[in-house]
Structure formats: C-alpha cells, structure tokens
Length: 69
Image 1 (cartoon, one colour):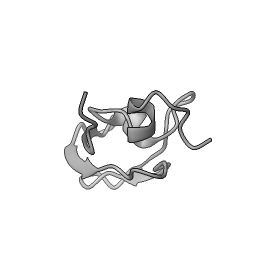
Image 2 (cartoon, rainbow, N blue to C red):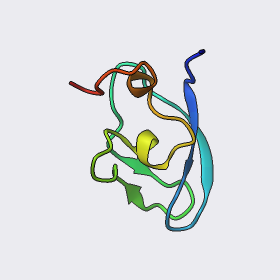
Image 3 (tube, rainbow, N blue to C red):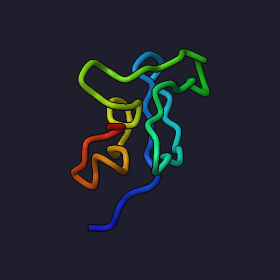
Image 4 (spheres, rainbow, N blue to C red):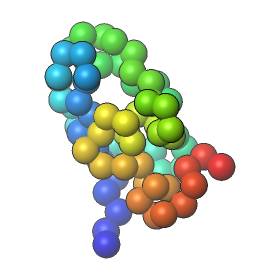
C-alpha cells in the first residue's frame, strides 16, 4: 500500500477543509485553521492533528509504527 503524504484537514469548528502536506519524520501538534484561525491540537490519544482531523493518518501511523516515540 502506497503511503499518503497529503491529508485534508477539516476544522471541527467552522468545517473548512484544507489539503496539507504531512511531515514524514515528525508529528505536527498544532495547526491553525486557514479560515477561522482556531489553533487545533490533537485529540486525546492521537499523536498529531492529522490523526485527529485529517483524511489520512500521519506517515508513522500508516507504517504501523508508534508515532514520535
């Protein structure tokens, strides 16, 4: 299965969607919504904003590895 390197983040507040490139070797803990400017952080139990609000999990999770360990 090919690894996805882009993910569409959906803001839970204003529902704006934005396609973003995911970092391969690091987690992204903060993301500012391009529409409402709300700062998103991962939900409890998730490693990054892509795993919480994205259309695809981050690359380490896609590889079945522990993210950021």
